[in-house]
Length: 106
Image 1 (cartoon, helix red, strand yellow):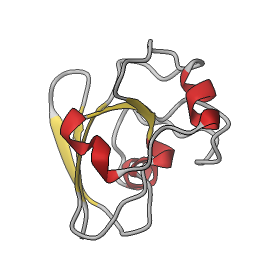
Image 2: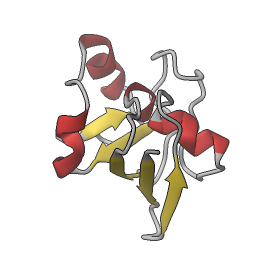
Image 3: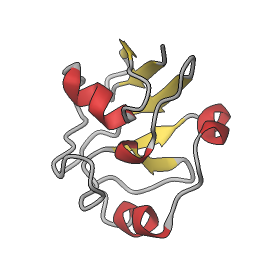
Image 4: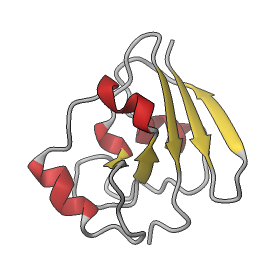
């Protein structure tokens, strides 16, 4: 079972047991993690699930694609080198993922 560690803007951490095949965004929304809106439902047409992926976790996911890259330019919080849309981070069995939620999504 994957685990997702969400560091919230106030510094608190929420740990969620994920489901294999779900996205980091779906896990957040399903478990009421504040700060992850997922307004488009995960179809890559908004940037309201923007997160900063821990550098040591980047190898567990495919690189940012062209569409995701364009959407990250629309994020409410300025993007960083580790910025990802959490709808594009699909969980695998036994995976641990650490993300930081930005202060605002809208």
